[in-house]
Image 1 (spheres, rainbow, N blue to C red):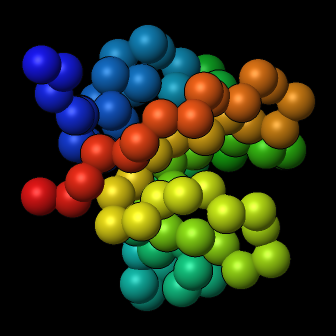
Image 2: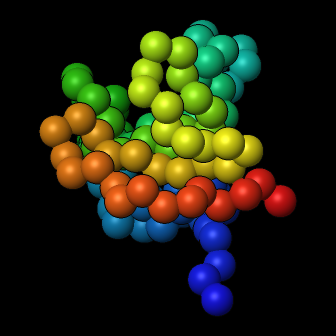
Length: 95
């Protein structure tokens, strides 16, 4: 049986690829509340957020004005703009 990875496990794996900057918005850091809990991954060898979109994100909720992602109570990762969308699979449930 396949085990679902946690957000932290996914983040750790992506970080292990090297030259990755992970942005994790949270209360009090000046980011919009809607982004709190999500993760944004940038290719950033110098450690600074580069201009443009992240190469990957982990979203934890539906965003208003966006097509439904079918997240329900779980979370899934989505590719950055211009990349191939994931196959539609049932997201892992939050435990």
